[in-house]
Length: 476
Image (spheres, rainbow, N blue to C red):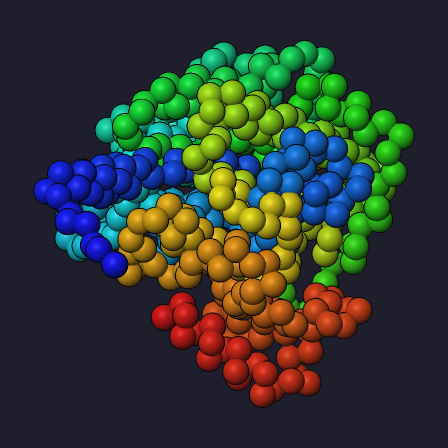
């Protein structure tokens, strides 16, 4: 057989082809990231099994991603929970957690690891936040949370935006009710409210409009990928939403409140002070079933209102075409008791305070619409987003990438850690153990019918020792 001579022209063309393909690969734009944070959101959505809740937009989104049905936050309060999300590390238990971190950065007395947005910025991303992403909407301190010299997360955001509309300042929007009403004294502000009008009569309307505008701008940048975080305030107290959302629940039967009794013995129960200090017209939901039902319906209306804002943001992402190359995460910053254990609020270390929804969508994922019961925690989100985006995972985080679970929902998860100012807890597939700072232990068996109503620590001493070691090892 005669072999033809390979000409220099052939080698030149081959070299050009290889070089061109390499440049295309090297120049491929990294995926964008859109992080949507919803305040005080229980995993009580139709897509998570709550048939009485109207959450159509989140439910449609859930069909494009994977639902983590056993996602637990690392702290049951806004500030410390967002600290773990945005740093990938455990931190202080106070709402000032991120400001404490900022103080260390400004003092320069010790090394402070990069936050998630700063890490993405260092990898070529444009970083933008809108609304309540860190504890203060807009990410600033001062009397009215608008002092540009006091930054909650230094070096994190190229833009940190907080439209205030008629609520005057970020502090006003945080607890704002309809048409510019600002909380001056909680006791003079109604704990819930229903007012006829469009979505703009409450603060989240302005946040969503700003987020939509910013998404449109970011999507037009052909060079840099974006990391955008949007923080929706509702259903945070007070429960206010346009009347059309409350009307969705007319005639809808709500399930009975599970284990509504105050727990016996020592626990992390509290007196629902955040809720009780609002004007309740002299009523107490623990003793007035009709009032309890009304509270739950107004909370549900606030969830439906938040769901509508999520829908607008995702619709704009799709309209721009950026959805084809954007990882989207919907995250609830913690749970919220609606009468379970006779608590109306968060802050405890019971399941209801720590269990929150998490949905992750990746444009190239194969298991769209799947759900998983693998236990995961909020500190896992930072390394997971790095893994999905194809950038280096920093070595200082306290979580792990759950990319494998995104790819295969049957993959096992891991124990989840959480803490408040008085105790810490570990959640396994079968148990929750709560360790108080004075050494007292609560142990609850989730395979039993009693779940978190019966402390079985005295009956399972070996398990207590094992879980105590695991808990202390991770937190230390």
